[in-house]
Image (cartoon, rainbow, N blue to C red; front, side, top):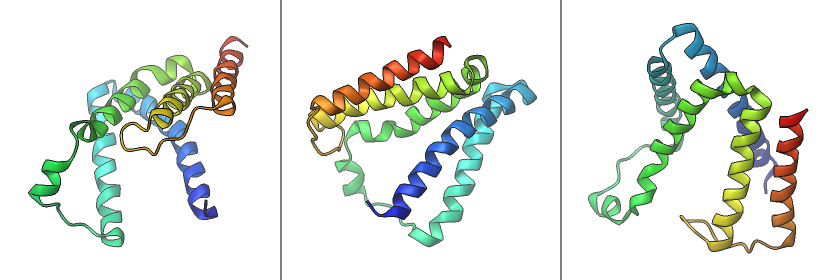
Length: 147
């Protein structure tokens, strides 16, 4: 894994926790969760449009759209659910528990998706170390939650 990709990914992981707090604070300040979510979406759009000239932007043809699996269109829905959960629950749970829950759920789900090679991921068997890693994540979440 090239170091810049790894560093950027770590940075993105840090930002997910900061994003949760920012989204929750935006909701608290505006007292309108849907408006807060729309601000998040609008800001996402600005970021995407700013990056587009550097990575290229072209619309796919109808054949590519028709070949796209139905579940691939659900990413925006899932992202919206994540943003709304952060807006509604991050402040109540606190950063450690909210992030712990979302990251641990993501790790456990990732192990299953990799094991079965689902939704476009290459197959990586859920061997002892991966399963143990998921269990350690759950144990860490429990420690953070109950202390």
